[in-house]
Image (spheres, rainbow, N blue to C red):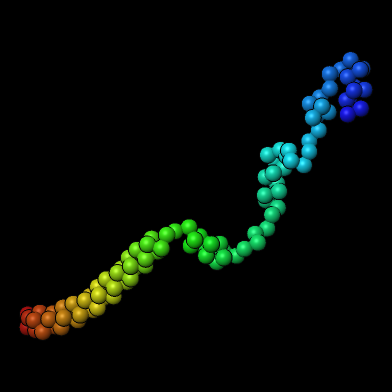
Length: 104
């Protein structure tokens, strides 16, 4: 503070940095950004995702689980149906169409 008074007495106005020195609580955006970039994560991705589970209500989890189970059930049924339909269609084609193709 004595340096600011000495500069002011020489006839020049003191700069804002001299009047208000930066403390530890005041940092520029660039300094804060650099500190954020330098920090390492203390948790793994799995831990972070597990922490997000606390954000949702139990009924949301049960609804999501029921939706997943239903979609898995429908996918299995569609797979079984498509297998059966393909087998029936292939057999019918061989019995009904191929003899006509060979005859002509």
